[in-house]
Image (tube, rainbow, N blue to C red):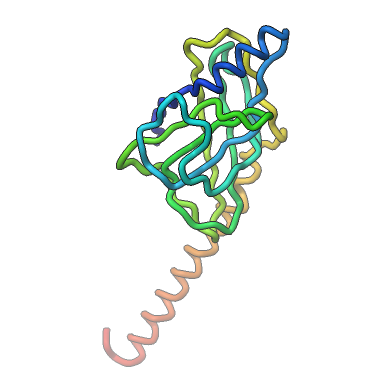
Length: 174
């Protein structure tokens, strides 16, 4: 299931886009930050309210001149509810922020890597004014270890259940 997020483009982010374009360059999105505060973002925002982790973009593609697709994986040992997301340029400027009061996107647990993908539609900005700096990592490969962990946990749980059933049968309780 996917949720459509409508991020707020910041004033500083728009200024960075226009400055880059006026110099014949593209602004470079290089990181996505995750935080645990929920609020209605304003365009004058320059940081997340409660940033927990800033992650380099693993993979990113230009879907169109004004739409970007980006994926990140948070493999930290941190624990928090993801309630705010920030898209940062390579110079540290917050380009866009998403958050909503009373809405949670995900839970980050130390035991499980959190894989997130975002499509960012940049309406009202010059076409082709943004590029993505990514790590060139195909995240589909990174899902395999997580699936193996889940399979191991499921098999271990089934083993405990079967063992427990045999113990109850031997005791004459079932």
